[in-house]
Image 1 (tube, helix red, strand yellow):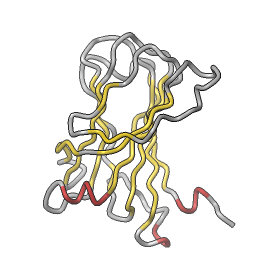
Image 2 (cartoon, rainbow, N blue to C red):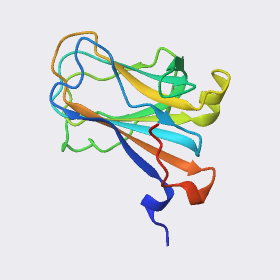
Image 3 (cartoon, rainbow, N blue to C red):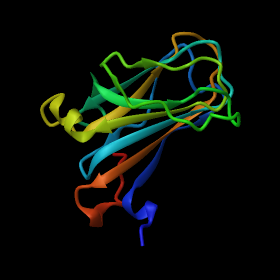
Image 4 (tube, one colour):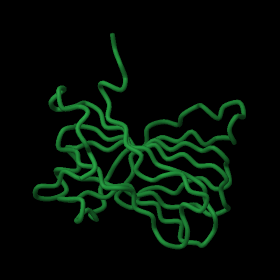
Length: 166
């Protein structure tokens, strides 16, 4: 029997906060990919503002040094506000450059799916095996949201439940 929680490590990397993102960039907890091949960040918004935060992914060597922007892939589920018809339809998988992508403004309940490959993280520098999500709103406007990381494709299946936050 396939048990999702036995094959995936789920980590709350930015907790839900009423004004989660403001004038300063918000960087998620740094995720250690040593035991996993993939990391999927889920960005979930609540009440949103009229600004369009820029999303980037960082790679690095540790939980203290993780600031090198890398390429990644992403999808959105942000066509209409939840629970409107079509609010659960994902976009095509899109390549993002190191500059990232801009979130869509003013859609309540948006979902962004950011796919990070451990091979891309490793190629960004010597001994790189950590990644983090960066959200830069560039304005002091309230934005409600959270970010969850799902680590998958464990390198060593028996280690799937070990910590991923150093």
